[in-house]
Image 1 (cartoon, rainbow, N blue to C red):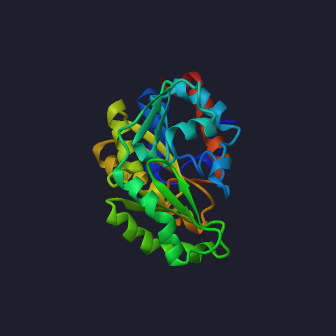
Image 2: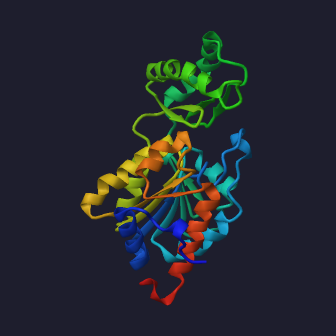
Image 3: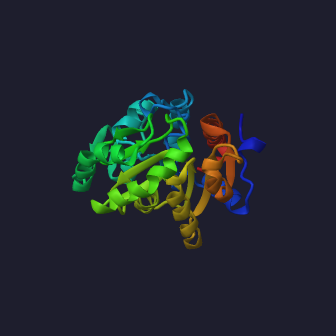
Length: 283
């Protein structure tokens, strides 16, 4: 298939990032969000599964680049399971925004922040007192707690109703709120995809990076790449989602390339694998 017009960056910085990745793939990191990027967004996060093309594409890419990473707010083990990533050599999963790390079949993580347990104990009562609409539900991620409004009659209105109170509740227990697509995640501060990505890039001595994401939680990763470009890092920023999709407008406006959801991400990954398999790929 190779790179098509749909998988070619539209900005000078993005074209430079792609060129650097293809010229020296061993010095490159390919980092990918999970929900909305590798897996379609679904009403029940427990039913999310990666696009069927993800595992074959990553299996082909991983041996040819410095690292392939999945950077997600999910627990790392769930991302491995739902993504079909077990057994793919060279894939690193940074879960809970980098608080957990899965690599070579091993999971490492520090102790959980005590504020998460405190919020967990209070959340149901607090939501009831706020009059949270029917359909509001809580996802316990272990190291964080997420309040979803997607199943309510008016998801956007419910999201706005709960946003400020959830921010106050999080602050009371030393946590912060990470807003996403109709979800408010209460989690420890100082842990985000930008910090996780930056740490991995420095660890691997990367000279180029492709980062793909779809949501507000990916903004710190985009910002990290933008901040490292003046230091010599070549970066290609990819937004998964239609340009007119309001939840990802901020990413789309900053992206070097916008692709149509997980299927578009897979097409890009497959095209990169094919380019890097050619003798002239510069390895």
